[in-house]
Length: 364
Image 1 (cartoon, rainbow, N blue to C red):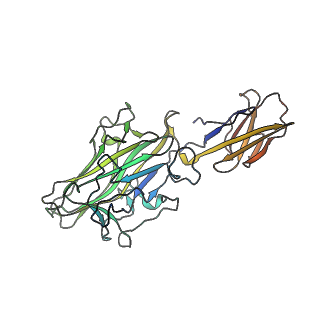
Image 2: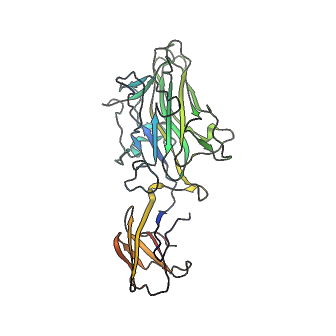
């Protein structure tokens, strides 16, 4: 892929966002636990802090939210209506398994393979049989059979949303419990999930996945789902969330006899890849972006100085007199950022152009 580079002429200053090697890294944001919307476990769910988030960057470049390139919401704020479900179940005898979605990996995702939202190594929080178990419960009473979730792209790049993962549990032989579940796309508000084939928004209430629970079972049944977004559309096409935009979805339980028996959902996650919309939608990983910020330049005799910072690491310096030929290699390597740093001690030409790239990366 082509990468933006920094060129300095005379005393011109600039900020460069330099992309290192392109990568089709799959990124994941997901919830293992759920926060109550009110004072107790029957108050619905309101959660803006997904436990797992592979996009954490300790040295973020470009647009981000607290070092995260993806964020998510459950309940209020996830859509226009912000449906919250019934609340939280803390029963540790069911759900709370080791994967987001399908038990087959892929398309399911091992929870321990996804870093936590603060960049810590991936781990299971509240595993089945352990302390801290948490799942999202629903029942057919006063919109408590509905639950809304959203994902926001905080980066400067398009995000190709590929799968929604979740585990769902209900009991068909309990006539009170909901038997059917689907997840649909919600248009409106801030939601804008765009088809790659024609640039149009996905149709409101488009069903992404529908499941029914088997008849005649004596024990609750669990579906471990990793639903493909492209496969849910006709004709099939990739879907993208633009920079700064969101996509909202709703879980809908149905087919229950009375209102009070519960069903649950757990291990909810979104997965996909970032793409550079300004470079043919080639794969890119925002975490590999290095930002170089030049704040001052000066020339004294035959020495050329720069004051600059980098998001991470040192820089290599390339030089040209015609903006075409930058030589066979850098004129300086491993130059540490700082104030008044000498980048060229042989600046004797009438004019010169300088390019800074992250240390070890290809030059112009």
